[in-house]
Amino acid sequence: MVAATHDVSPDHPPVKSALVGALFDAWAEFDLVLSALTAVEMIEPWFGGSAFGWTYAHVTNNVDAWLNVRFQQFAPHPLIGGQNFRFGGDGCIADWPE
Image (cartoon, rainbow, N blue to C red):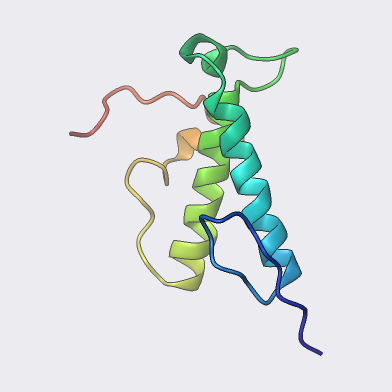
């Protein structure tokens, strides 16, 4: 059985999987919410948890690990593939690459 085409935002082409379409929608919503935050709000831990900036980097780290490393057999991205964006990491970058 083939899933019906799921229309996502105009920035993305239609996809045949409702699950993939929902994932694209979630990423778009995540970007929308985070784009409204200030730089200070991005690095503040909320209610004893993680800062939004760390959460964003953590999700990006997972996407890099799943799509690029696991499925395409690429090397992890040198910045976002680092341990500091995984569980237990501090989310800090001491020296941004040029």
